[in-house]
Length: 111
Length: 114
Image (cartoon, rainbow over all chains, first blue to last red):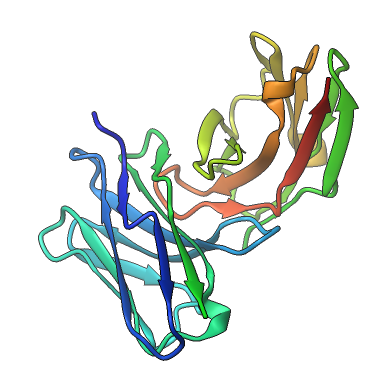
């Protein structure tokens, strides 16, 4: 059990650029979640998967955001045409029903 | 819809003091799960406890204890004899099945001063 891995840990991008983050869950965990956390706030749910199926998307997930989990293992979160308001920590978690394990997050700064 | 409220934004205590972090939740579901997580400056969310709605027994783990009261929809967290290493942001969270998205409170920033 190596935990949930997220890559990169930090990303600085210029406004208007596209960025992609990767999450590798714990191998036996079938559910994978993406959250966004801004300064001084709790994590806010974005979307989640069971295996490769995307089960739910939050209203926070605008059309510029897309997430995939093509083989039911790792997942990617892409943000197109980034805006300064996208600056946040993006957290990934996985679960089996007995609890949630979080990764260390990807901190995105849009300049 | 579910909601978690942590009314205390920031708390500052002197080392060895006891401190209680409050959590109030709202849900119409009869079955649900409550969680506490710790987020140190490194940013990773560290799991502390999970409690289901059918188990109102209080729990103690070392210096940590939790008081779950369904009558007041509260799940409070007490740290006894606080230490500087307890300084972090603490989040209370709720999920319906234990395998569906968590709903988090806004967190309480605890500072323990030596």
